[in-house]
Length: 412
Ligand SMILES: Cc1cc2nc3c(=O)[nH]c(=O)nc-3n(C[C@H](O)[C@H](O)[C@H](O)COP(=O)(O)OP(=O)(O)OC[C@H]3O[C@@H](n4cnc5c(N)ncnc54)[C@H](O)[C@@H]3O)c2cc1C
Image (cartoon, rainbow, N blue to C red; front, side):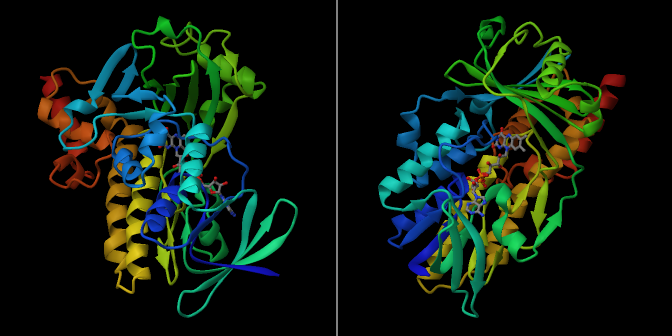
């Protein structure tokens, strides 16, 4: 069997794979990526957060991305029964990026992959990892198979697993663990949004609270296409019979804030379902490998944290891998897993407080305190590592406390 050698093998050409590959390549090491699919390929996850811009910048991807003309995103907007809650990233507490993009991921991911390839990182598309063997020093031999069934071996000093929902290393080495979040479901499509101007802010991403535990994303792209998806527990979807398209159209019609805009709308593809996406692993690293992006833990789509956690984890992992290749010591627990868990756990608290109604009380309260609003805004911008922000540092208690104060104040 043919054998190739590299310093670092990256699994997956999504945002987590390409950011890490770029950083390790820039440091002068040999990197290659293996990617199961042919690009461009569809993946969900279209709303970015400002924090991911830092990772994209360091990976030298920003110039190519700016050339794609994506829709800019300047804040987070939530709507419930016609009432609007508006967070503007320019007003956030943490000193960071004030904007980002809404992106069709097929194009976005292909742009990242093409850019890293132009830098000199080879990508083998339609090539799937089927097995990995590590030796005691953490060196590995990976077996990959291409679309024609040809197999080869890749010897690497280190592996970065950015395989997203493929979860290659956790599956191969039995590291998968169930998430502590209940399973949820999404039904979504891309729509030809010709009546966008019916909305007061036609190009703005909006999260609509549909009913308790059920919400809708509306993500307009600069192309005129808008991604619209429903998220909730399975029982909500059971109330809508028929084909996925019939279900989807009935759901659109049932939400008065959007019914007219999406009445009879042309769909770019038949509505798709995703469910039970929350997953985790017991460790984010091992002897000779590190896991990045969705492979580590994916929570929930509501705060658009996925691509940010993917790019920030690969930004950090890439730097630690470089130090390791140079012969330095890395405390993966302290320098990687603890840091990533700080961000994941902050978002986890917000996700739980979203579904139990705590954030409803805060988001739609009258007379909001501007300082607290700016601190919550920073979390929504992805700055979940700024522990000078009390709404990051005390993420598990601060929101509940604030909601209680608002409830008492409003009952007086
Ligand atoms: C309903 C829903 C809505 C979401 N909305 C948002 C959102 O608005 N904003 C946001 O930031 N995130 C969102 N997400 C999360 C987002 O989809 C992911 O967090 C993000 O794509 C993770 O990037 P990644 O690079 O880790 O993985 P991916 O983007 O999934 O890339 C992994 C790559 O690895 C490849 N691969 C898999 N297995 C193998 C293998 N065996 N060999 C070789 N290659 C392999 C895959 O083909 C893929 O290209 C959403 C998720 C869901 C479920």
